[in-house]
Length: 278
Image (tube, rainbow, N blue to C red; front, side):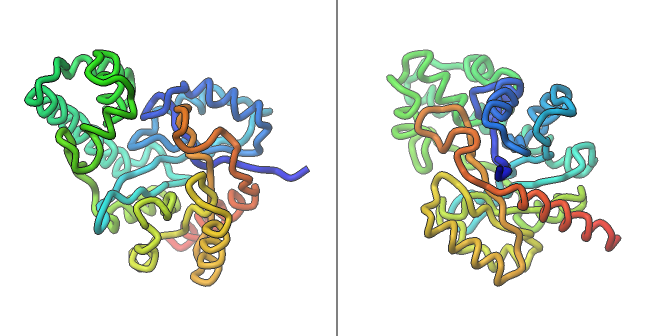
């Protein structure tokens, strides 16, 4: 039987709705060989899952999804097999979370100026233990009946260029890749079709990018094939995953992308070779 993996999963420790324990149960149910929790700017979901997995469970890969500055929109870099206790990596994540909180305050202030009755405490209640992001503001707006639906909050107020939008303060791509490498991991460009991030592959490769996410719900089969071919030509790794958030109509369900276990084998080999160089 073929062994498959899902290397792109979100939990309630960032902008997913399922707890790490619930994600683990779903991974078990789907009989995956390995999985990675890649919460936005947080290792908390991974750390919780690490305490829950047993020897008989699918293999858990350390991961995190970082936002970096792109030429037009945010670019997301997935970090795999990183040392989650690396001081520089944790400093960067702490700075991300501080910036997220400041951004949350600014979005609430803009919404207040638009006449909405919403407080930052309302947002924190929706965020729980997660670093604050736009999804939590959207949930708070829906809960307070400022909008009818979560989707409306983004479409009318929180989406890029909308009245309550506040841009992120991101790391430069080169700095993010260097931090990932310093923590012993591999830097992978997430969902390259979204916002046409694939146009930056050559530039990011020159900065040290290790690979691209070929399998993703936003990719057609032709996209997946193209990225796999490009990666082979350029000596890049390929990975993939469902980008599971547990939210209806937002990416895929756990294990929906048939990503072969060999991607994990190649990730491990690549990271070990890089570590041996030091």
